[in-house]
Image (tube, rainbow, N blue to C red; front, side, top):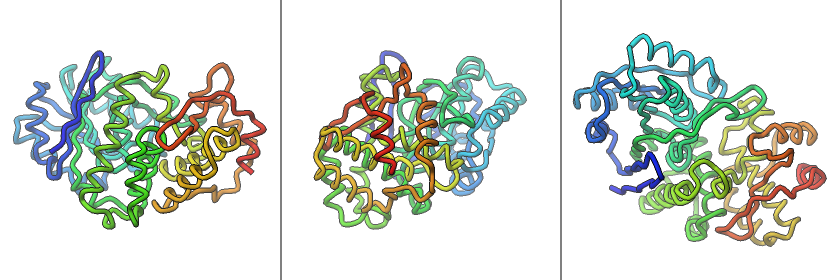
Length: 360
């Protein structure tokens, strides 16, 4: 088992990583001295696979467990879904020492965290991610929220979990497309922070299917990605500066998700396209070389991810959407741009003309 500490000025916590650890969730939560009541929030597909195991483990440790299922997909990541969580929390008399536990991917984690942050001005929150993307990204760092019709994650809060519990066995039930979506975030860490991770990914013959990876590489992917995010978040919990580099590929990626109604592209696919475009912008601005950009492009293709838009979206529509992004500051779009494999900067010097050129 691996344990990674997230050291923050307040609300530090642990990330526990091990195969089969899901059956120990009750023991882990008992050690945290939480209240008796736990609300497990999941979606029907994930709960069918892992719900009974989690609920039984919690009940065997003496917790009173309630469950709430939200249909899968970004289209349900909205305030109406949060309101249903509040209704159940009120009905079951959940108190400030009660716990909201997210069992699922990034959508479930974001919504559960936001509900936990806002119910009774804050109750305990635990992340049990079941997708690669959630394990290496969404479950760590305390970003929670829901979408607005005009943009992704415009409504939210920073709210840290008490624990992140990662069981690698659950990835065996992960659809291939969701595996690939998670690989986009892994590649992101290699580009912006961890050149050794990037090199190990390049050395792998295949990345688009988990079954093609050695157990050692899978462990490396998860642990190094988690550590990369922890390194950044520990230095900048609420995105005052450095943490913004974690948005690499997300500026254009979020716009593509929003403009396609969160249907035709999943988050990782949109981020992959966004990374390719950010890499091309960096070449145009002479921040890094065309060779480095091609290395990134090849790795994204190896992971089975798209490198260009399938939809015929108008560049002006994308630009308009970019202006409403929460990362805009003083009216200027802020891009994360690579300087080298393992290093990135934040820039507001990307002109609309250059964005139009890259968008084609």
